[in-house]
Amino acid sequence: MPKMKAAIFVAPGRIVLDEKQIPDVGPLDALMRITTTTICGTDVHILRGEYPVARGLTIGHEPVGVIEKLGSAVRGYSEGQRVIAGAICTSGHSNAALCGCHAQDGPGTKHGWKGMGGWKFGNTIDGSQAEYVLVPDAMANLAPVPDGLADEQVLMCPDIMSTGFSGAESGAVRVGDAVAVFAQGPIGLCATAGARLIGATTIIAVESVPARMEMARRMGADDVVDFTVSDPTAEIMRLTDGRGVDVAIEALGRQETFEGALRVLRPGGTLSSLGVYSGDLRIPLDGFLAGLGDHTIRTTLCPGGKERMRRLMEVIASGRVDTRPLVTHRFKLDQIEEAYDLFANQRDGVLKVAINP
Image (cartoon, rainbow, N blue to C red; front, top):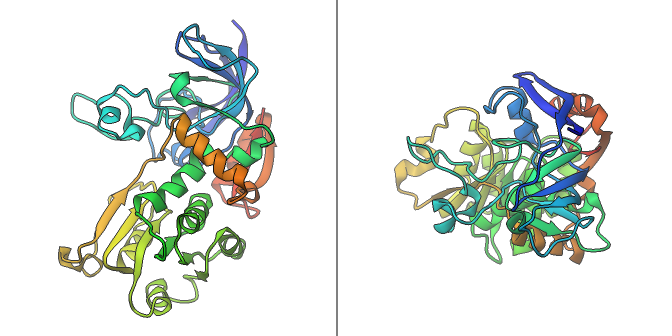
């Protein structure tokens, strides 16, 4: 059987490049030859053993590539076509999908629904840090890349851009809103851009790394609060004349940023949580106003599916948002272990890496 190179989870602390068989294609599947992919913060959680996946799994969930082979029942696509697939693969017929929650489109368990069901690549099936990836339910998940858009222009669409934008969408940002975005990593930066695109007129980013602070302004932040210099709660309340923000987006997955986001909300405001948490969260009594603040706390798993991907690529094509500056480093697939070392340890000003097989 023909082989391919793939980044494989071996054990906590070890993701290695090895060989696997190229997947067989079922009737509804498509085999995508990867031209560009990347590493996500969630992959680092997997590397560290903070999020469990099966040993031997190919990691990665952000594929850009070309259709190599189509399943016999797939219609509307052609081999050789440039496509992306969202990190979240929907089938459309699970209980979650039929309830309108397509991101959770996966099987439940006999002990009840555990969430994350729609995240399959690099979680429950082999992912995209490889020469090829098998895309299930191809007609629901493959989105053609418009002519004129380069791989790196659409690389953020499968996860980072979709997740970041969803922070603003789930927070129900309205025209004229004040929004605080805690942490300006790639997802936080896309949340900042999304809030601006939707209509927020005061966007306050919380960050301490100078390069990320500058990038936050570039992506749409009006003010950037350095939490190592001043208390972000006090500074955000000052910037909003004591009113607080309509929406606070938590984009790191830490107790302190979750608490900070809760404490800066106006009465009736919304905390939109995007972070992946690796431990239990505590809700502070003062920030929660003893449960009497009319606050909403929303969590979101990255929206996927071909229509979501089409819309995000339309935003890119329009020029309203440019995510190319988020790609700061580039590696070949043969250098994937080196790329993980750089990205996991956040060296050399890394934001996102592009991986080319």
